[in-house]
Amino acid sequence: MAEALVPLLRRSCPENAGGYGGSYQVNLGDEEAIGLGGVELIRAAMRKAARQLGWRATTLGMIGTRHGTMVVVSDNRELPEEHRAVVEAAMNDKMRAALHKVWGEPGPVPVQRGSVPLMTQEFRAAIAQTSP
Image (cartoon, rainbow, N blue to C red; front, side, top):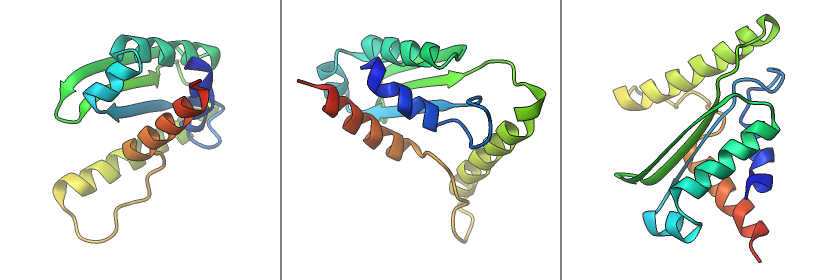
């Protein structure tokens, strides 16, 4: 599973950020997560994939949320100065998109790279390709 996740985690990093600032979240049905080995196995696979990319990763896994099972990994390395502005701008864009939705602002939602539903679909497709 970890090998299938490496390219997904790599793509979660902002463009031109040197591989820094990535994060990945999947929301699965509780039964689906159990079928994949459970939240701890999924978290372990995400940690392993993150280490392969050199991330200092933080992971979180919760089962039984209103979204089902939620598993998150994020890169928490110190940002080199040459990548700081790009990563911070990407974080601001994500926050702006989230607040736009929460506040119900009119108009199109700001472009957001890597939404959770998209990451969840990519995760399912990657895992399906590795299953016997």
